[in-house]
Image (cartoon, rainbow over all chains, first blue to last red; front, side, top):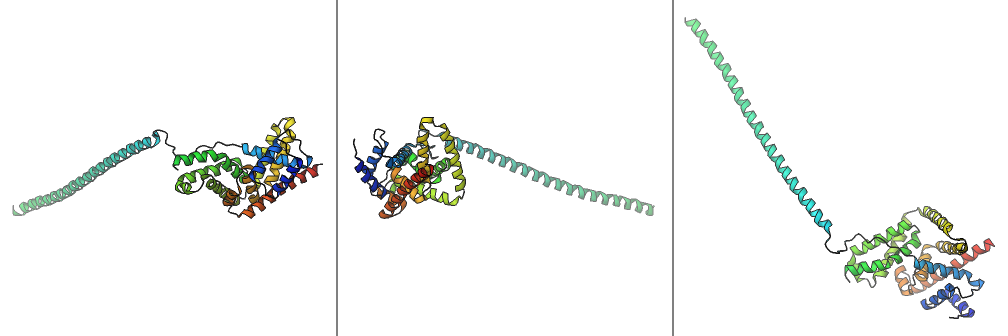
Length: 145
Length: 171
């Protein structure tokens, strides 16, 4: 494709004013990126700019897919997580119950101990009383002998 | 449009989103991060995305807004430029002798583009690299038609001046 120097001149003027259409810009880009075309020294800067733009268009990245589950088949993570949660909950409840029972037993033990202590105290008291009575008895015997 | 279509469309324009972000943010990591963030946001609010006339324009607008915000919020812009210079030195060294001058010239264009104020840079990127029509650029940039053309014209002329100015200094 032959594009005359004058045509390029006119297009470049429009280009610099921001008045070119996308089609005209494609034409310019093709013209400047074609190594066959002898580029006027006046337009060397433009060739560089269009080449640069062309290279930029080729710049590609491949980003990791955004971390939203794209459901290809069954995803096992939620299932595994549910199981883990279930097991943890089960053991938790089990342990809680064990703790509760142990606490209950300890409480019962403490209560019983308290009761026994009370009885033993009362018993000691009674013994003292009995010892006193015994002493009284002996004294009485001595007096009335 | 269901979720899969949204994902597919985002996948197909991810390079474009990345290029626009990078035009502003310069750093590869940060641009990547920005685009991924936008993609997740769009998928989370996909009802809005589905209502948008085009997911692409919607996504590009979000990328543009977020990269401008990021640029403003971090005043580490200085650091980024240094990072970029380092990258350029490395890539320049990798060039073969015969292509060296061509690589140098392209770097000059790159410097000239990066030298533009952010909005001009974006408009230039959207038009001269991404090839958007003026209506699309107006809506992405939230500017009217004549403002877009003026900005584009300024950008193109400034790039020319910058390149020619540097040439004159060298010779």
